[in-house]
Length: 91
Image (tube, rainbow, N blue to C red; front, side):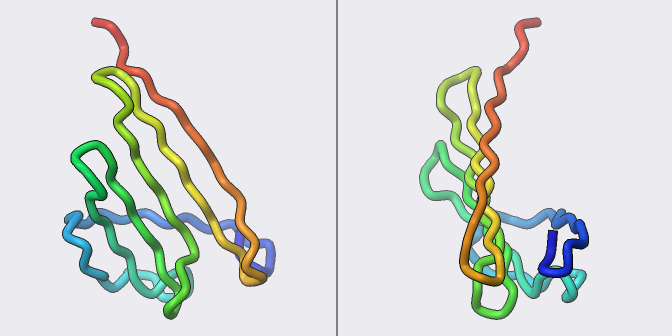
């Protein structure tokens, strides 16, 4: 939610090259970026001005497990997190 209590969604596709790219809806965000921290961790950032307003980290914990941590920042500098775990289904 934004400061006015309106829900919004940030969705994009980008190459994880560490370069900021313009975001298509400047009312939500100005730029986005993704980069590999290691061969097992992919991070993405959403910017409004120079501030990071959202961050996500996808961590491969094993061949069958992935952890996703999302952190969202408020205008007051507070944050809240969402943590998800995924397990590959056996076929």
